[in-house]
Image (cartoon, rainbow, N blue to C red; front, side, top):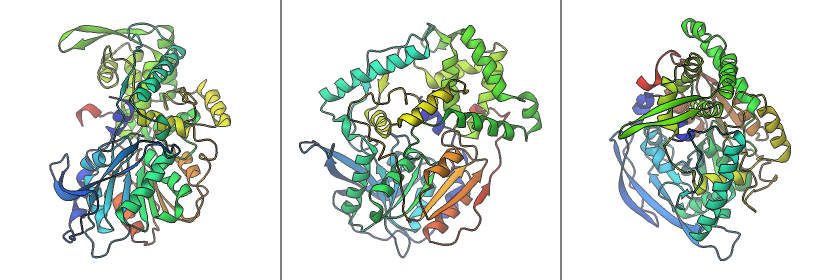
Length: 494
């Protein structure tokens, strides 16, 4: 499981809290659109709904007049209200998440509830979901899991893997320069036209908010209103390591509200630094059991636990594993670390890359001044450069892919925007989210206290705020408070 996947796994089990919002008028019999087919959409819960799956074609790289055409796919859930506004387009995170895949998961009740306002479009961005996807590249590069390696060794291996993969994708006919947020914005414009709509509303989270902000900058006249959560600004693909340290301090403050947890973990930052120093001086050799063979040796090093931590801190439901991991390692107990390896590591697997997610991050890039600040902060920060890995390590690694400083500036304008921010978001930090929308003039900010990165399903109040915003009703209460998880509970048993 990747860092992104384990971060997504921190969604709380209470998704069904919004199920009561599903009751409402029967769906209207809307006309089947061009390129659409009727489907029965089945969620992971087993719930079903009648919907339409549609597709259209776009150039892979609009800058190339000879570009091949690729297929973009979506699922349309027809509106249930008596009147419907512009279609609401859901933008998944990642980059690399699937809109239709997200709609099948824990957020399915919210997708259904949003239909009271308009058709809801579960959009599969280029290279994701049911849209046409470049093949995944498995390189020849491997990192010896039983040998001591440095940060520089890891970076060199990933850079070599990317160089191989660029050649692989070229041989497969993939134009990597087409996998940018700017091209995805153009896809959104084409989607709007394909749907026959004068405008659309956008609803996104994490990288989906990055795409929504880019659309606000490039095609503001096509956007009615925007809901974003856990916002990632156009210049925030690489986060400041110092803000990760500030997040650890907020996590400590939350733990301090629970006396038993506070007694066990009085100084998480100090604990992390001690364990990092121990592992840097003397890595721990773990024998990882296998179901179908002998145990495989794994040398646990400082960079491994920094990578584990980067995947755990997205949401407080999983962040409780962080101090437990470090406390156990300080005592020489590798039980928890061995279990986490089952999520992060596949024995003998070569370095492999996804074209869409890799290219999107490299294209959004980072300016020189920010990169210098990030690298300086990483020298002393708790997680170094691993929160954003493999960026900025692969920055500028593909000629012509970076979208440049102009892309990373903005957006401005007066489109109504609702921003939902969790105070314990360990991926996109509250200060950064405020900065991401600083130049927009009509932003309603709602803070969800004690929520993390994946906040949509933490409480029905989030959905209620979204509905008020879509109805253009005043939102006077701009803070929602939810309970903290029990930091001593075992997330594996939730």
